[in-house]
Every structure is written in C-alpha cells, then in structure tokens.
Amino acid sequence: MDSKESGAYGAGMDIHPALRGAAWARSLPVGGPPVDSETLAALVAELADRPDLWAHLVRHDPRVRWYERVALSDTVEVWLIGWCHGQHTPMHDHGGASGAVAVVGGVLQETTLWPSRPPASRLLPSGTLLEVPPAVIHRVGNGFPVPATSIHAYSPPELEMKTFEQALRAPALLAAAA
Picture 1 (cartoon, rainbow, N blue to C red):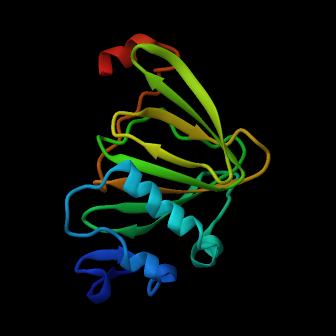
Picture 2 (picture 1 turned 60 degrees about the vertical axis):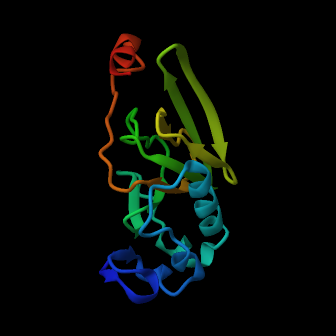
C-alpha cells in the first residue's frame, strides 16, 4: 500500500489504492475494540463479492507464496493471498487474533491441531467462508495443480504469529505450547 488514508476512511487507515473509494473500504471497523470472527467473515465475504476491486492485484508465483495487505485500521487488517501448487503456511496461530478466510479461487487445504485430538484436515474449495477463532492452530496450503486465491482478515491487527513447525511430527510440543 502506498500511503495512509484519512478523511472518509478515518485517520491512520491504510487502504490499497485499488480499493479506495469503494463502499467496502468505508465500512471497515475503525477506532473500536477488536471484532470477532463472525464480523470478519462478513467483511471478507463482502470483499469476495467484489472481484472488480481486487482480482487484477492477484499474483501466483510458483517460487513463493504471494500476499499483499489491502487494508489496515487500528481494528482490522485484510490480506489478499495467491497460492501455487505446493505452497503453504507453517503450522501457526494468529497471536490471539480472530480471523476469517474467503477462498475465492481454486482449492486450499487446512490442517488444524488441537491439544487433545489428532490433526484434522479439510478441503476449502472456492466459495468457502471460514471463521478462525483466536485459539486455532492451523496450516493452510494448496496441494492442487490449479492456483488458489484467498482473502484473509484479522482482528486485532498486526499481532505476532507463533509457528509450530514440529507440531505434526511431535504432538507433545503442541501440548506444551497450549
């Protein structure tokens, strides 16, 4: 993003130039407490329904997972992510933030870890809207030959994620981290 927006968006809000002026950007939560995953899901669903605002920004680079933050306020941050085959996040949490994901192209796979259960995986095809509660530890990736695209939102914004790279191989590490 190029610069801080103010005025219609509120002081200190960063909005990607491609989204400036859109009603979606003016509806972003600002100046209040963190919002829950249900509110974030509505936010990413609304943006997902407006590919005219973001589709031209998406990149799919087979060498590295592409991502770009398209909005940031003191309450929420929103990311656009392009995934090629074999690209995935590490196993991670969101630092206590609530989240939401809208899969807007392709298919992603999520593997979730819970201290008292075995890992669980599920497919997230295009059209999936996923709420991510603050305590979730998961890994998201694209294991399919078709590129995938997703929109993510988190609140509060800019919290540091903790990674759990060894968690699938050593469940005791996950239990110790809980």
